[in-house]
Image (cartoon, rainbow, N blue to C red; front, side, top):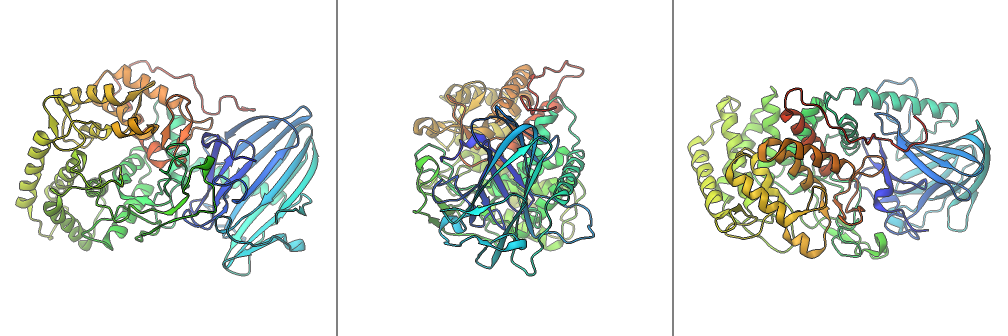
Length: 618
């Protein structure tokens, strides 16, 4: 069997880890106990070696699926000639104190026959440690089917008869009639005794409890614009990608999904990138999720404290520095795209834009009355002092290519913005009794402005450019107005937008990141396409065009509203790691900017695309 296409997956999770579920009912990716742990199911990267867990009716079927409204509980409906089978997938969440113990980790799969008679086929083939471990599944009798590896016990309990198969896994069939149900509970624990919940009625109580918890969280969203379903879905994705114990948000739950099919641009994104900080914090705050925004900024403060004044490119979910990158040659990669990588070698890079984005996120906390400790204020001062010394160095930039350092215009703008925000905090009295070199910050800020407006501006092209004294453009230049460096309505920004649109625009509102991507066959970049909408909404173009472009971008999501990092502009297929937090943050930001810029009482133009359209039931 081959894995599904990237856009044919849906995501479930519990704030510690996440699983990808295909339209065919296969869990082809699950890393336990954390996002960055080794995979237990990894057929996504190698169908033969990685392992899978498949629930599917025998014979051909038509498939529709949906998330239950305002939740991360997935329903997949299989319609066969004989009847209808529905599979409900989730990782339970518990937001209330319970009178009974619950497993450390659990994944539930519930099956019900809604009509007629259907034979359910079960294939359960866990492969720990990216398929390298030779751990057998053993029959534990009433305690379920057990697998032990590296100190963890994985237990499958079910009321469906299973037998050991030829590939160290389990196989079974069950003919189900209308009204009949079947249940599967997979748990993981590294601490004895293990909690093994019963399956049956108790399982459905877990489902109902999780639905209630998710809907309670979604109801806190204060966005009330015309695109609420897409915005709430993106918020739910960000919540799934948030590591609950720390507040850190991983860029994606996957590794090595290719940006170019069959190519080598396959990276591990199961870490928390500092460059996403300002965008993520603004998205959470803008939707009214203050608790999540503050948790994320707290994670950021803890993580950067350990490496100050140097700010790392990314940290793990606990805020620790992760270095090193390894290849897994025993895996063939998604659709043969090698190498498969674990870890990320960009850790030693210098990305000066991270300083501006991190300080902007912290500023948003302060603007809302958040109090910073004295040691944290001293750290901010040190970051500012570091910028005054390092701003004129070349760096790898926001897109972190592995081709060496250059003088990126966007990095300079981010340094300018960092000093601008620090001076704002000083003016607000946030620094209190911590002395700040205000004159130095003022002087360097103005030097940066002059450098950007002269060397970052190409008079012949009449455009800001990707690199100082260069002649290529980059979609990140649209953020000059987002950061407040240049008004979106200025002549410079409008002409820069026109140049970007001519060189990087493709399809219905899609943008490539830069001209390298166009030459090298990359897909259009999701977040850049949403940046374009935000720029138009800020006054860089026509509001109606911004809203029409946003509606078109909503149609680029998969059938359950998820986006990858990139999109093939010709086929519409997703590329890169999936789902991508940065893209969903871009969607939320664009929706908020549209709402802020919407002319008073203007009629709302709707797409006609409702989330869950085509699903089996209302």
